[in-house]
Structure formats: structure tokens, C-alpha cells
Length: 415
Ligand SMILES: O=C(O)C1=C[C@@H](OP(=O)(O)O)[C@@H](O)[C@H](O)C1
Ligand SMILES: C=C(OP(=O)(O)O)C(=O)O
Image (cartoon, rainbow, N blue to C red; front, side, top):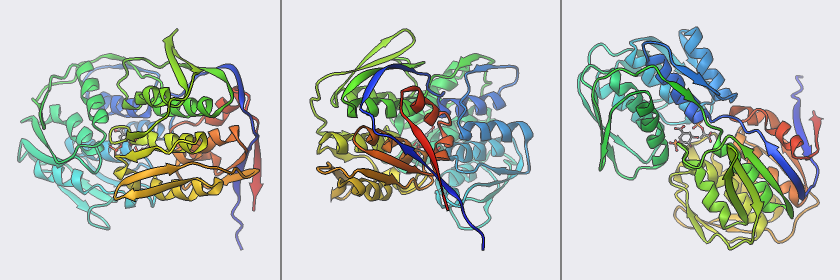
């Protein structure tokens, strides 16, 4: 019989935080775009501050070693961006990833690539990885229509390869566009590397042109920053300084500043970062997460702890991320008597916790954000996080940073 050892991490209860500086990791979203653009640039870019995230390290490894099979593990951006990259650079490539990655849809992107002339086949289920790419023999069309309500990563992927296409590309966005801020990030970053584009109404137009060698420093990660906002919001007292964040960020998850202003956090941009202090809670009535889906777990847990019956909308895409995040949230919130209740189709209400157990054990569903979003529960009770290394996808130093903030962690091995 084989024994499977799973480690867990015990986080001891703590609710006062002496002013501490949290270094923060770099953004994996910015890093993965900069790396693809770098691979498409003739000449030397100077890209600094790349993310330690596994998603980014996987991108670096695959681009530099160029194996026949691009195994992206569980990195969505790496799968979608490298599928477009391998096509435009005319490579013969198999794209694959974890079992979960092979359940995350990619048909919208494959259809768009086929419309412009790509030779791509599904190796297993239609619409899902693994894929076999045989390059782009000739550009068949300079126009594609892409629906915007599944994943913005398909649109970002097409936009980044567009300047390399002999006829350029017009991307027409169809229907509701989710995660729009990530498309804006892609285009603004491309502009920093010398690309001209227009985005009028639902049409993005990019003419054939060359990326220009540029110096680019990746900003700290606002999604990773959100857990520290939540921690202080749930704590009795303290202050935190988050390094390397800018007020005018390329990252839409900087919306956490406004969300947390309703949940008791005052943010001041100073000395190359943000100083977080506590202020009165005015209450979060409702929030639309359409353009910042990665914040939904952070805010759901914060509201559940702070007694906020907030209404959440714009969370449709959560079901096709690292796990079904709606299901995972519902299961884990229930462990401390809170709920995420669907009150109408795709409208959810947080029903906060009224009684807190002495200890809560959180299952993390192979999802880094489940582990990090539930960390602030330690302000109210002892918390055990299952499979704590899951944070490596975006924030490998997360638990070390918890220690910096004075949180005691203890590894537990379970058989
Ligand atoms: O382009 C990106 O860097 C990302 C886009 C978002 O995905 P969707 O567009 O699928 O919502 C986000 O959830 C993901 O973490 C990163
Ligand atoms: C959804 C995420 O990433 P991806 O889609 O790139 O796997 C995430 O980091 O929360």
C-alpha cells in the first residue's frame, strides 16, 4: 500500500499587528505578458522584477528550453498565451497541463486562431487541452470575432501576437466582456513596447509592426496584496506597509483599495508602496467582480468575518478557474457558519458567521487563492490550511511573509 503524505500548516490566532513591511511578490500577469512580448521582440529588452510565481517560472522555463511539449502545469495565462505564441512563431508543439487545466476551456481561442489560418487539433476532448499545434501556414483572415464572457486571456493572447501577423488583426469583442482590466493591461504593456493600437467600442485594431526593445520593471502583485488588506481589515489593530505598489497600476485588482475602504482600511500611497491603517467600517453593500474576479475570494472571506451581508455579482468565471471557486468558497465558509448563498441566478449574498469554532481546517482544492483568502481567519480562531504549498502558483513566499507579520506557523504532517 502506498501512503500519501499531505502536509498542513497551523496558523495560530493573532489579532494585533505591529507596523510591518510586507515585500510582496511581483505580478505574474504582468510578468507573463512581458515574457511573451520579449520572446516576440527582435533585439534585447531589459525586463526586471519578474515574478517568483510558479506560473511565471514555468513560462521562463518553457520559452528558454523550448521542448516539443509545452506542459504549463496549472497556469492559465501560460496555456493561453503560449498557444497563440507557438502558432504565430510557426512551431510544432503539444500544449498540455494538469488534469484541471485539461478541464479549463480553450475552444474560443482555438477557433480564433483557426479563423486566421492556424493548424491546431484537439488531442482529447473538443474545446479543451491537450492540443497539437502545427503553426500558421498562411494568414487567412485579418479579422476575428471573440466572445468576451469566458476568459479575457484568449483576447490578450490574440492581441499580443497581432503585430507579428503579416496582415495585422482586428479583434471584435462579442457580448459581455469580463476581466476587461486584463485586456487593458495587455494593450498598455504592448504600447510600452512600442505598439500602436486602437480600441473603439468593441473593436481592437492592431497593424503589422515590430515590438521595440524596452526597459520594463514588473510591479508588485495587487492580487497578492489583497490578502494583507483583508488581514488588517479583520484584525483588531495594527498597520501594514505593502511595498512596490503604484497608485496608477496596470492591474485591475488595485480595486481592492476602494473595496477595502468600505471594510475599514485606509490606504495611503507613499515611499513606493501603500500604507494600510484601520478606519471605521462603513459597510460593503454590493460589488461587481466582473473585472476583478481574483478578488472575490478575498472579499467573501473578509465580509463573512466582518459581519457584512454583501451582494456579489460578476462571479460567473469563478467556476472555470483553478477549481470551481464558488463551490469551494461555499464549502469552506460553512466550516465557520458563514454562507455564500445564490439568491438569484449568478447573484450571491454573503451570510456572515455568527459563531466561530475554536479551530477551522481549510481544504484548498489545488487553488492558491483558497489558501491565501482564508488566512485572515486567524484573527478570530486557530486555522489549519491543508496543502499550504498550493500558494506557489502565484506567491511562493506567502507563509514567510506571514511570519514577518508575526504570525506563527507550524507544519503538520498527516498520513
Ligand atoms: O490575463 C491575466 O493575467 C488573468 C486574467 C484573469 O482571467 P480571466 O480572463 O479568465 O477572467 C484572471 O482571473 C487571471 O488570474 C489572470
Ligand atoms: C485564475 C488565475 O490564474 P490563471 O487563470 O492564469 O490560471 C488566478 O491566478 O487566480
